[in-house]
Image 1 (cartoon, rainbow, N blue to C red):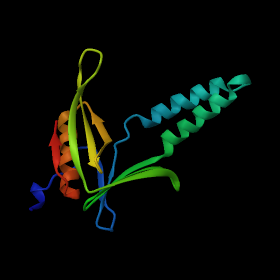
Image 2 (spheres, rainbow, N blue to C red):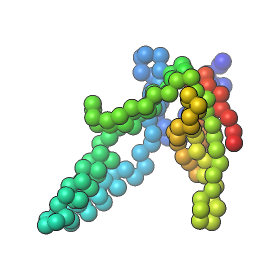
Image 3 (cartoon, rainbow, N blue to C red):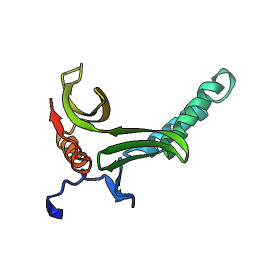
Image 4 (spheres, helix red, strand yellow):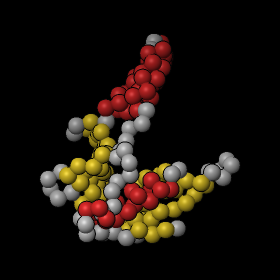
Length: 154
């Protein structure tokens, strides 16, 4: 397939080859630093007395939000999701799966949004949620092209 016809990740997503035949897809981090600053400020205000433990937990969560890396490794018949700081983190791997796009609506005012799932081993696993259908559809096509999986619409 010519390069111009190959599905591309949605605009703003960073995709790089990892040298092992897979591609690393990084989620855009919109406003993550602002969230971290707000949480750190709230933790600093709460420090002292009986609020120390919740404030320390909030500060650790803020550090995780600020410095954790989220990477999706997409290759032939494999999708791996890694989140963490260095070796501290977790990963999930999906093989022999299909993708499914499902339209849902919010409980207030019935605003539509879409979710992308991996269907593996008879189970549905949530991958992404977006209010922009075109972005989620582009992401599904890109992942399907790289993994060889099919995309179902619901």
